[in-house]
Amino acid sequence: MELLKNINIPADIKKLELKDLPVLAQEVREKIIEVLSRNGGHLASSLGVVDLTIALLYIFDLPKDKIVWDVGHQAYAHKILTGRKDQFHTLRTFGGISGFPKPEESEYDAFAVGHSSTSISAALGMAKARDLKGEDNKVVAVLGDGALTGGLAYEGFNNAGRIEKKFLVVLNDNEMSISPNVGAISVYLNKIISSNLYNRVKKDIELILDKIPSIGHNLAKAAMRLEESVKSFLVPGILFEELGFTYFGPVDGHNIEALVDLLKSIRTLEKPAILHVLTKKGKGYSFAEQHPENYHGTQAFNIENGETNVSKTNKSFTAVFSEKVVELAEKDKNIVAITAAMSHGTGLEAFRKRYPERFFDVGIAEQHAVTFAGGLASQGLKPIVAIYSTFLQRAYDQVVHDIALQKLNVSLVLDRAGIVGEDGPTHHGLFDIAYLRHIPNLVLMQPKDEMEFKSMLDFSLNIKGPTAIRCPRGDVPAKEGFNAKPFQKIELGKSELLKEGKDAYILALGSMCADANKTSAELEARGFSVGVLNIRFIKPLDVVAIKSICFSVKKIITLEDHIITAGVGSAVLELLNQEKIKEVSVLQLGWPEAFIEHGDTDSLKKKHKLSLEDIIERTEDFIKN
Image 1 (cartoon, rainbow, N blue to C red):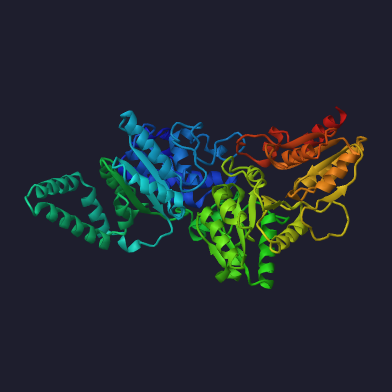
Image 2: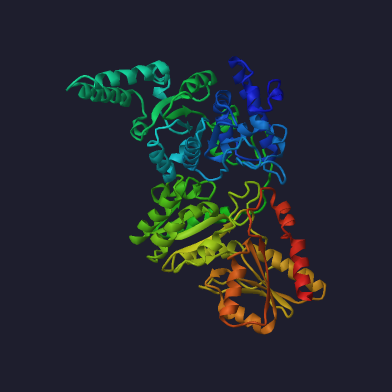
């Protein structure tokens, strides 16, 4: 990596000759592949945007100029080339650099990013702030084509086109098929349209025509209509032109020389512009190029054969969901499945292949997904909406008004509920209980194991009204340690007594029941009798069971994979207050009200005192004191 070793800040890239930039791109790709083969991460999209990143850093002057990345996992090359090359080996590790743009990590990261479709709005705010302060820096928003399925992107476009100030949007298109327009004609048109001479002459002609009495104004309008007609025929950007942007593209996003040449001209424009570049996901790594969906977010892998290094012995909750939803759909033709661009991540890929006519991937449009499900449910169908917990936050209003208010039978499956590890605060599902449990008509639950999850899915499809099931990342807990009673179908609001106790009870939620049982067993060896109640239902709570426990013990511990604020522990405290039970003390164990950093789950639990050892010690101290 002869060139990369001398690149510490973007200014170093400008010292290179244009012919050297493709060599630098190859070295950056090798660095990304090397680190992600050990750490895992978002590989395909990162490799696809390396050339574009280098061209942007070559032309613009960071950190004075601002580049706002839309989907944060495009920014790996950006991190390497903006002072974090020597720290890149720590990517996504506990205490290392984040997998997403993070302003507190570097002055070159203009805006924190984790969810899609936000870049135009954020960058527009920066551009407007620049104008109000009388500054002269450039602002660039870089978004992937998937971001255009999100309504927020169009809200930003609609507003940005009216400001008539310098503002550039780069559309990184790695899915759309517009290849016929990539070639000599497109390059020629873009050179003409972007040149200072073209724009100056165009403006002068318009002024001259306007001064001709009677017919001049009409001639100018006719000339503009002719220009737009030609451009709409030759250039697929008329939508953006109508929104007030000057459109350039599509161009080859891997031709750095052409990108640099075009960006030089666009940089001088004093109005909103959009540059449409075509890239290939996984560029430079054959396995990722052939199967980009498998390398969107990958575990550690073997560079030579592309195979992941982690051998899985246990089922994940996502895998259980995948199997069960296909089984249910086979028996009930009214069941349909919806996802927001995450069919693989949420486990719906098998359903898509088996029942393509009943499967709907709406793109990165969570709000639409929920209201769309409401429309389906209003006509007697049974929609299952599988969305990551963190992304359902974007559809809060739709859950309230379009689902719960009408008591529609929509089953929300919240994948990645709880801590998720390396992807960090933008992806942890630690707020869903807080934003869902107060909504009228909605039933909220979480399973402790495979059988319970399957039963909850059955249950959710056969009651009136919306349900939400929290589904954590990772393996389903082993059955060992749970009581040996035969499994019984769940009933609305009914918990499960796993073990009786005399000194205290742990009220555990979902997969935390495994740690609760282990805690009980360890404390029994230390002379304490600690019961375990599997809550199952966050809403409605099992009032009868919890009141019964309060008659037998005076100490309760709530254990949940969620922030303490407004979680299960809060719900239990509200219940005790409502029932005027004052003699029972409650210890809430969960995540603090904070944005939990990225890192492996074990390290995060240890730092925030939620490891099994911490739970045991904190429970014992509470019982003693």
